Image 1 (cartoon, protein in one colour):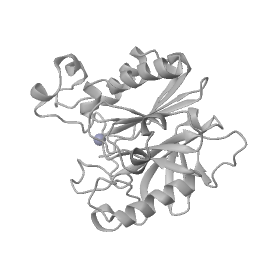
Image 2: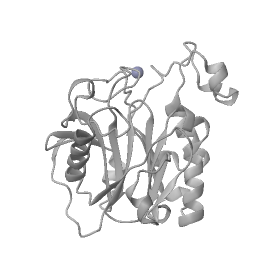
Image 3: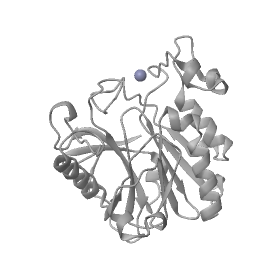
Image 4: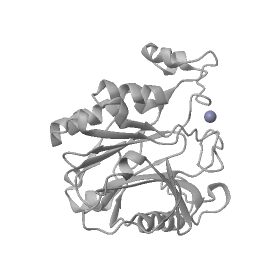
Length: 269
Ligand SMILES: [Zn+2]
């Protein structure tokens, strides 16, 4: 991952996505931002009990750092529904309210897709040929519903995406070191038990990689950040680290080819 710092914030980028000028993306660390107390840092979790005003300030900061004209957000509900921006937000009422879904897809420039997480995965997709992006919230519930496979199927149908043209990034999330499921026999379907170790910890990174590959994404086009949020809870919000916590932002969108890139300092590549 590429680490960048900017005004009062820090973020990571997937090297294969960063190589394309027409993509704008970032996984924001919780460092910086305006939130205090339990939510201290750059909390963009609009479904948390942090001050709505401060969350807005944090979202504005993230948008400014990235150069986004507009950030599209949803109420994430651990399902497998998706929304296409702007098609599925056609009426004024829909555009003004926050709709519920767990994935966003768009081919519109400068309107960027936000997924907020604290242990769940944000999985970013970029179709380098058709110029379409998707951002997926894959918690364990979304994972066992194969939301990743579903979104790739939708991209194939709606945008003629060829899976071989997709670049995928699996963001910081609960690693196999910490994804313990004591009640897995009730919660996780048997077909996923092969991803469990002797400590009842599941490897959801491997599950996502396998779902991406099953949908036709080429192995070398998948980058897993391999950063466990619980092990790194000083850098990322982690629900398993502390129940009352914020959510960090994963944002992806399309940039016009003549647009200036965001101003930031490359700290380490
Ligand atoms: Zn861990």
